[in-house]
Length: 125
Image (cartoon, rainbow, N blue to C red; front, top):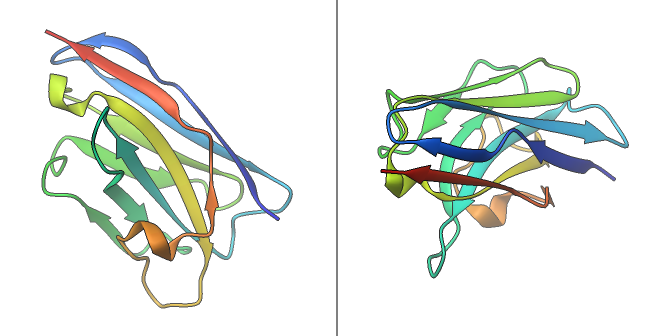
């Protein structure tokens, strides 16, 4: 069983930056694809970014491309550096993990087996 805990959320002004972290316990993340999703009030949870178990494959949603950077330490942690934040980035951010059954990570919520509780990111004007 993999337990995931997000941290690093908060309140920031538009144009600012935040760095989210996702830490795992229970087992290492060495053989797991990882992803970030977010959910704004009244909206569906949406894909933000994902990274393969090796770190070789990375994907971003078009809405965050060029502003967000995903990374991982290869053992127990994953990160999301968020720059040039916009009010529309306001959401609860979730990290997710799945054992590497496929060569590359997916972008759909249903493809991930383990989820954290989420961390709130609020971007003000």
